[in-house]
Image 1 (cartoon, one colour):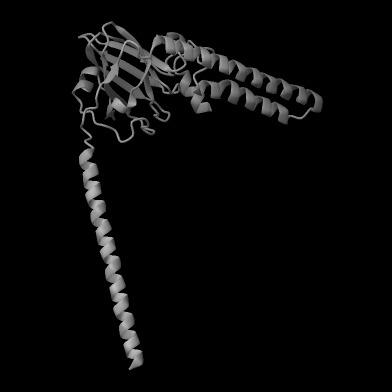
Image 2 (cartoon, rainbow, N blue to C red):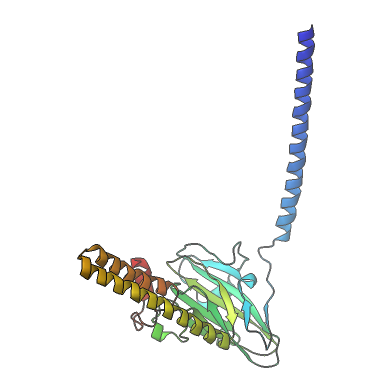
Length: 276
C-alpha cells in the first residue's frame, strides 16, 4: 500500500510538472506570435524611404538607409522600363550577395539650400564591374557610366572609387537611379560626398599607399638579394607572390593602381580579379 501511495504521488507530481511546463511553453509561444505579428506590421517592404536632405554645408551623407531596389534578372532594362518597375525596401541595404542579375537602386535627394549643390555619389567598392547613375531632374537625364570594366582613362571622374557627380537644384527633390552589375560580390556602400572631401580622401589614400609600396619594394629587394646569396629558387617564388599579390591584386581591390595597370584597356578589372 505504501508503494502504491508513493507511486500515485509521483505520478501526480509528474503530471503537475508537465502541465506547468506546457503552460509556460504556450505562454511564450503566444508572446512570440504577438511580437512577430507586430514586427511584420511595422515593416512595410513597399514603404518609400525619406529623401536625403542636403544643406549648403553638407560634406557627407549616407545613402543606403534611403534606398529601394529592384532586381533585373534578364535583359538589361532601359531607363524607361526601370521607371515602371516596382521598387521595394531590401532586407539588407548594403549587401546583395553574388548574382548575375543587375541590381537597380532608387533614392531621392532634397537640396534644402538656396544655391546649386554639387555632390559626388561614391560607391566604395572599386572592383564592381559596371555602374550607371541616372539623375532624373529633366526630360534628358544625366547619365554617368563607370565601373572596373571601364578603362580608367575613359572614366569621367578619375577617383579610386566609382563616382558620379550630382548637380542638385535648390529647393528641389530629385530621383536618382543606379544600375549595378558585377561578377564579384555585390557589396554596395553608397555615400554622397562634396568634391572637396572626395579630393582630400583621394590624396590621403595615395599617400598611405605610397608608404605601402615602399615597404613592398624593400621586401622584394630583400628576396632578390637572398636568392643571389643562397641560390634557392624559393626566393624567386616568393618574389613572384609579393609582386602579384601586393603590387597588383591588393592595390587593385582598393582602387589604387587602376591608373597604372593598362589604364586604356576595358574589362581589365574582370581579368585581374579572376586571375587573383
